[in-house]
View (cartoon, helix red, strand yellow):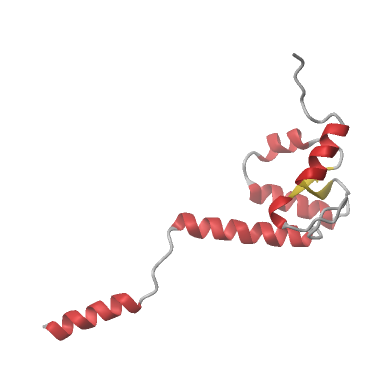
Length: 116
């Protein structure tokens, strides 16, 4: 009996521990984003900053709110649309670091400002 219990414990210990679904999804999305950024050139088109954590897709013509309404929260649909646009060379999107993106938005008056 003791040997049977010991064998059962060893089998359980040696089995890989399954990851929670939330963690699997998080890892998969991170990998998708890294691959997506790599396909788009992997660096800011203005300053060539290359840390994927701060890179953002920018709408060259400033029509981001329209796209957000169209695609909602689905990053997969959005990534697919951007990749298709890049493949067709439509020149609608560019990869910018967070600083360059906000500077562009401010200079082009794409940012809502509130008067006090």
